[in-house]
Length: 179
Image 1 (cartoon, one colour):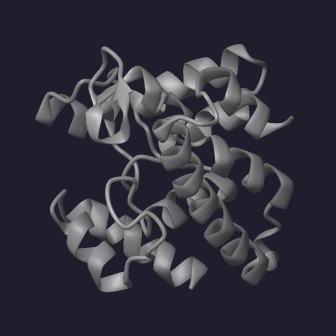
Image 2: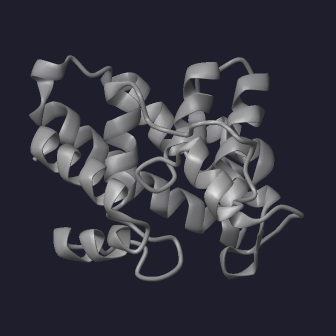
């Protein structure tokens, strides 16, 4: 598995979208690997974390996110399940699940229905330790501004709190587990 080769199939390496995706994904990957190494008692698969963290946002090119130089047809929120479909068709279903489940701290079917979100009606919750580590690391980096700046815990908490108390509880459980 060569995640950079897969990304290069869908993003021209000199494009702005590629630069944004790779800068963000590398920052998330580095943080995820640090978290995983600090928590070796959880027996995380470091190779998988590196590969999946680099691929977690591969689906953004299919979304309409002009700030990211992506001009697809789908809403940005769909990038996770679109990336999952893409990566799964390439033969990497476990990596695909990371794509699908990394958004926010996960999105439940009930949230999708209640908020009428443009997602298939199923749970998108990180399950494996690797999925959780990557989703957690992703919360500390933005693709839209200051790509390399790591957000503080309080900044992440404020951002997550906008989406309800259940999300805050899930994030705090990750803080207890990983920090």
